[in-house]
Length: 181
Image (cartoon, rainbow, N blue to C red; front, side, top):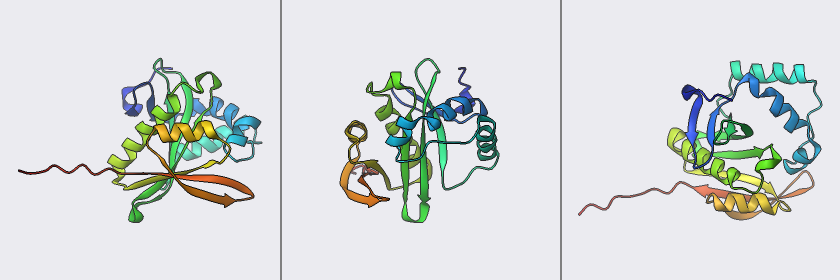
């Protein structure tokens, strides 16, 4: 649970976003195999063995994909509580999609998710120079929608995909202009 300073990529009020490590695999595997968490993510639970899952994570760590990046979310005490990522990065269009999972249920409903989202958005806007981040959340997941709204995302409409209804939400980069006098 030691967070090395070199691993930290962003800080929120309550969370730390850090680079993923192979030691995250067990938590990630537990969360990605969980039926309820998979339902919130509109995905099927992972059915790989833990060693195969670890090998997959190791490959991702060794050969990162430039269009997606995943980070571990830690609480104030250095406990790995979830993951946040951006993906579908389209630098030419100035946008990327965001995803988050607070896998440790003890941290649900306490503001950790919106804090992590705010930290990730700030990081990506700054480092990638994007103008827009967006996400899709299931229309029935009101708790997630509140989390994203708290982090500054605005609902923009409904999207139908694979027989499910998602709320499209976005956050635009606020350009702060200094008035010269």
